[in-house]
Image (cartoon, rainbow, N blue to C red):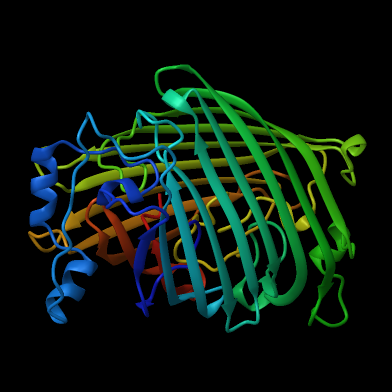
Length: 418
């Protein structure tokens, strides 16, 4: 699940399949390949939350039937997981949400990554409504990758103005409704390398300030406050990814370069361009352990024109909504942002059920007047990891982060932050 709307307490967990054949647990998870028998035996010695549930309530361990190479499961079997839960983040406070995920292969040979469709409905203590529909479809042999990101938001939130010279006390509330429609098609051109095109549409309406500061013009008003905003453009993509497990990587590299250009003839309010460079590196440390030292760099630049205020580079509004642990979403906003983070992930229990992390990050946005980078705002903290699924290595991540100026709070995710 992308972003900071994530698990805090399980209410119910179940998984079922559209056809009768018993699934291999690894096959339920997006992008996770069937492991060999030795690795499977190792994983069965580990513990995850379903194991704890069965142990506490004395439930029988379900049988696992690995596929025979001569009798592979039927074409297009659909595997479905559902999970209602509650969560918490600084920008939403407490939330209730329900998540449904479907996963399947697109060929009988099952040699491509697993395709996935995810939908969830979230309602927050701040009266926010979030309804995303996201899919990631892989064709035979991973030749093509079709991704969809559709979202509806009713999103009262907080803004702090533009530039790097703002304070927490500058915050006030805004509200808007929002629809996103992103569609991207990538093609493999070499091992682990993909290029492709996408169409991105962002539509905001009922944009308004709820309680702006009295007797002065806000940065939002100066920049351009409009009740309705449309951004419509084409996105060029380059991606390199040699990670074996994108959900919880323990080694490898990831690079994604996205250049977006918006045009009035496509319906955009004005012409503008942006560039995002997302770089990640993962190393086992020590090499023979399960501990991981991870690095993340996120560069978000406006290369031309003026993006809408609500689409300017800002804390926690990247494509996965995960930058800036230690700060509330939207804390720093400007035309350009540089971000870097490092995290050390380590095991606490030998059975893999519990782990821990420590992290340090820094972000810098350009000054609102000079458009130059001025200072770096650091965030730091620690967290615990609870294994939700030992086959995919999916964790529930609960972090506590600190930032400058007294900023602090919990940050909870389903899956790693990066």
